[in-house]
Image (tube, rainbow, N blue to C red; front, side, top):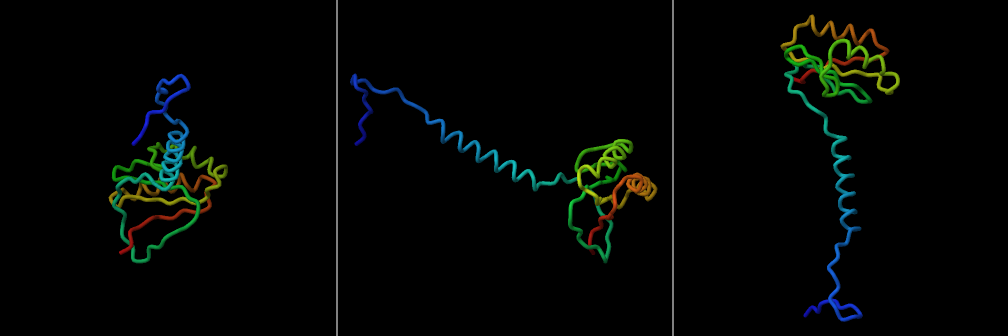
Length: 134
């Protein structure tokens, strides 16, 4: 049987909310969300061309996606050609010197070459064309 808490004057004490455990839970949830969001990559649906010799690449990289309309997305953010050139000019400051180019298989080859020209004009040292293994 539970008895109500009484003060010295014999009155019931007001109910209290323990704030410290709530702060702990919110802090743990914040850390969890920050860690999970780090591993989620924004994905644009592109149909990659097939290749019998496709392989995985490792290391720090920037992902450039050309969607079916030929629009550029860098790490999930839409960009123009000029914005891409500016972003790639800052690559040495980021420490990322490798680019993964994911072009939809229906994108015109001319558009892929235009993007490759922008990449070659930057200080990037490596480019990989991403393909779907067959």
